[in-house]
Image (cartoon, rainbow, N blue to C red):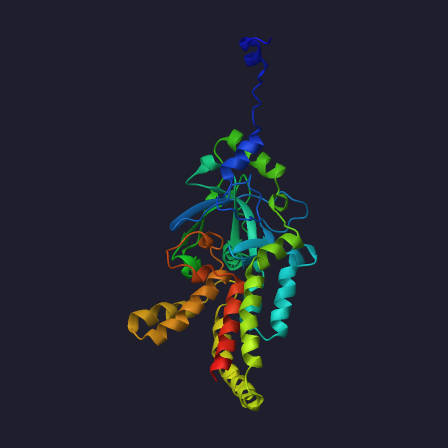
Length: 365
């Protein structure tokens, strides 16, 4: 018979690795698929003033301190985000296929929502939280262009290298607004005086060793075409098919004599309805959201209590939420008010509802 003391001594405590602890500490809740591996920290831009130091590129043949990535936002029921397989790997891409199909069908709104957005992924040090060490920041492409413009002196033709570890420059910028109204005013961006990455040489060496061991391209997390397709389809396809069947049966029960005028009439109405929606889609370009559409969206409810004026503003906000180049691209799927269901609808769900409305209009006519 084994004594109690022997059983206790037989247990051996296995310590978790540093990598496992880091991955757990940085793990995001809510079951999100992330295009950045979970063991790496991500920088969250703060409202108002931000002060960061961009770290140098540590991958081969780098021509910029940041690495260009292409991301599809608002995918599936949870509005998840995935790296574009077609743009980044030249591989079969179900989202690119869905976009081409939408283009063939003349659905510019959905085709635009399915277009991948360009971001610039960099390692940075948050000067207000240096203990966090290197963090990844996916900068909106147009915002990064404003940063680069600060590095070029038009008069002297001098080039400033903000990511130089010894003689680089901290970057001060401001975030204004929330969600699709987020702005990073270029007029308020500034490169501070030259300084070393850290006054403590040991700390600086530790940070540089870390990003050398983890170059930006190796921090990315790709998903297979099958995984992305499953997330994109979800259960929506079944619902779409179920919703469409009763409408097809209803049309089949209509009199043959009534079919022709009903077919021609909706066709004319559809053309008229699509024109304003196309103008709205053109205003929501996929880099930084235009300021004018935002002003129109917010001003209508304030200036006019007419319900008909409020309705067009809601779809505009829904489309912009999926295409905005701000730091809320993933968060809105889980954040928000109790009435935030419409903005959280997936691209496929919004497409199904639009088609359902068109079919209903045909039945009424």
